[in-house]
Image 1 (cartoon, rainbow, N blue to C red):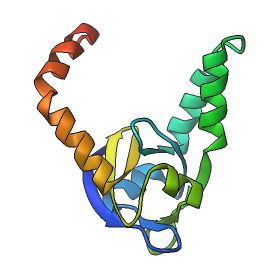
Image 2 (cartoon, rainbow, N blue to C red; image 1 turned 135 degrees about the horizontal axis):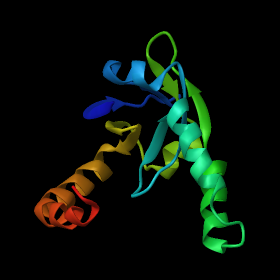
Image 3 (cartoon, rainbow, N blue to C red; image 1 turned 60 degrees about the horizontal axis):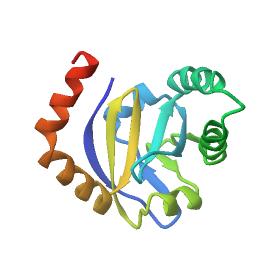
Length: 143
């Protein structure tokens, strides 16, 4: 299970160290793509395969579904963890996430999220302010 928050820097070549605690769960290769809320999503191959099956089930006649799938897949790239524990992110994803140097890598159960530190701090601060209200809404989902 992928859990926790880690701060790392991305270098000028787009290389980012993956937290050691995530490497075994991510595997040697995994998929990084456009996420939600201004971050990037990283999926271990097994999680990516399960997500692909769900995306294949979306209706081709629904414009929003087609648009989402196109955007999600077109941004996706396979990355490999090198001997130093780094991945190389393509420039388009770095720009999409607004990462300049400092970033946060967080574990979210079956995926990671890669955030610019600035975006993460703003997001986390707002979420923390509403945490109890959000928790109450989660009761509708049986939590």
